[in-house]
Image (cartoon, rainbow, N blue to C red; front, top):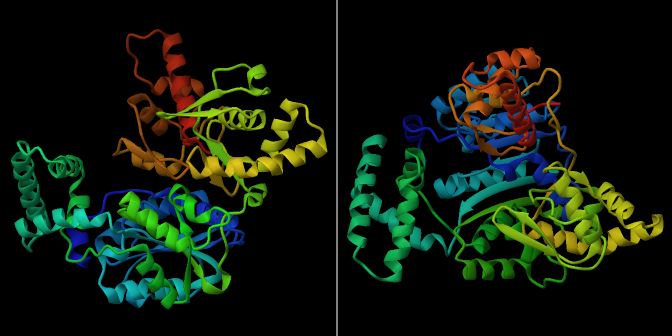
Amino acid sequence: MTRTSYDEIPYADYCFPRTHPEHLFAVSALCGRTAPAFTRCRVLELGCARGANLLPMALDLPESEFVGIDLSAAQITEARRRADELGLANVSFRAESISALSDDAPFDYVICHGVYSWVPPAVRDAILAACRERMRPAGVAYVSFNALPGWNALRTIRDFLLDHAPPGPALPRVALARRALAVLDESLRTEPSHGAAWLRGELSELALTDDAYLFHEYLEPVNDALYLRDFVAHAQAHGLTHLADADLRVAAPALRQGVGDPLALAQSIDFTRNRRFRASLLVHAETAAGGADPASLARLHLATRAQRADADIAALIVEGAVTFRYDDRSIVLRDPWMKCALHVLALEDRRPVAYAALAASVAARLGLDHRAALVAAAAHAPDVLELVFDGSLTLHAGAARYAEAAGLRPVASRIARMQAKTEDVVTTLRHTRIALADEARMMLRLADGTRDRAALLAGFPHDARSSAQRAGDCEEALDWLASNALLTE
């Protein structure tokens, strides 16, 4: 990772939901430890690029302070420009090396995504030293890296590309790499082996990536993948302990109650899954926690993307299978309490619900008295946690901080409105990215809080649709923005 390479090809704009302080707080709480309050925290991001990950957080958490560090002066200049355009005073960006940080003040959360594997050993030491020395005792650090054994095979592609795109200016090297990939793909078309089929699949995915990803992942001077056990040993040498993987689906086996050696189990599963990437959460060794405690759900919120079941209330409150749809999956539940719980969450359309409120809603549907409701909520917590572990539910530390529906003068997220000027993909107030259809993009740009429905409708195209049709489409676009967390309270 060099200063000039990121000046030549800045990294594409991405936000990473699992780096958000709320998520770090929630995972910490699930493991029985209390992290600093995420609504009023201090966050350091090492390798912040153009601020695409940090700026939405600063907008979301106005009482918190954010500091972004990157070696590339060009990326920092753009990050500062965006912060100014958004009018954000709680975020600052600095062009400096991780090895020579100028800010010694303590941070509650430290984020380092997509850096550790791509820098020399001395800088990897500096990353973990920063986590240890600049993070408060109860803080949480997020550090991602390319993992073995999965990256062993990808290293073959990297070596191939380095051989065909020798050192030089970045963009010509990308062009050489793409030509080499095309020739390699062509040569594999008549090869019937399983290895050739796998490689062609990887090449197909690489063909769809942007130049920044191809260059920085495969053509940078350094890209060292490592085993989880070796990363954990490096962290321990710096006084840090591995808490969990940031992805709870990945973390689940090692977090379940009764696991004898969580690290050994996690490493073994990495072999069986041929895992190629990890995002580890680190804490100070003195504050290490155990596995996930189902009772911790009582202090947390839950949400789901599952759709309401195609069943009436009568089918929910008795024993019997009911199917919920979730993307391309099916969730089949038989227990009445669990069916009602998922139904309640599905009605909220991905808005987080406190576990206590969820349990109360289920109890009302099942006709449980206060004592029975408490017993049922505790008894079903392990089953609910399993739905978190398989990705059916998402874990949150608080309620939604975006509008449930469009108001009289709708206000769209400032950062999404800024992005919509030049992009078709914007960042939501859930800290995710979403593609915009034409009318949603148009509505996003119009919804600045100054326009009522008549003014919004006036901004819509005057085409062959009737006034009623245009009004209906306008309202549909607003509903879509609200459903996808693009409108503020």
